[in-house]
Image (cartoon, rainbow, N blue to C red; front, side, top):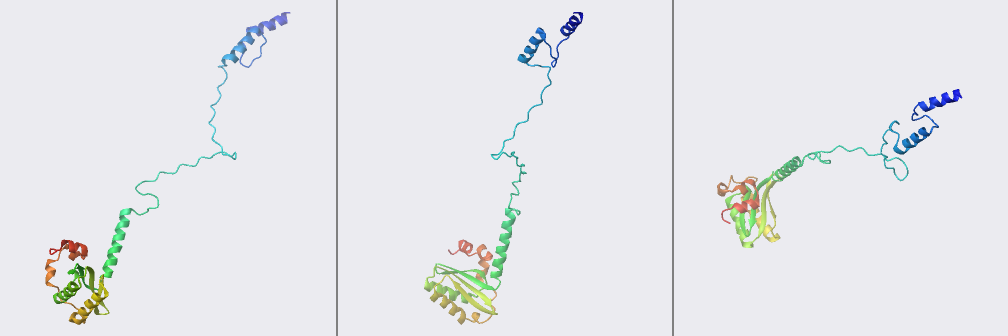
Length: 212
């Protein structure tokens, strides 16, 4: 009895810990209360990591790494800036035009039966002969170019009918300028040439001419 009573006294005197087993009525109530309210003395569980979405096949979904942001000043596929590309194209066009005019002696533009020297040098007498042919034919628009090929001058006519073009070539061949490689120094009208004539641009030359 003494041993049982002493054992009972020890059991009742000790407070039941969170993992101790006690058969006393107070211990049972305390255990129920901890279950109902939650045992605050229990160690906190680590937070759960959010689950990543899975593919339909069951393999884990792996997020693709973010691509570095590209600068708007140098977009992909354009290693050279647009302005530099335009400058290169303009230079190529200028070189092509210069090569095409390397052997050109003169260029006369025709508008509505009138002639206007756009580039080069042409004798005044030869220009007057061209004006007579163009005025009689009533040529609306054409270009007359004198070039040097093989050391001899040659006349090229574009925009005119075959009959008028042949008359212009005959006029040029019958003159002494069609049989020699050199032309006169400059016509008298060169002193009055506008910006379009100096640049060799036909439409600008007609736009700025005084006797329109």
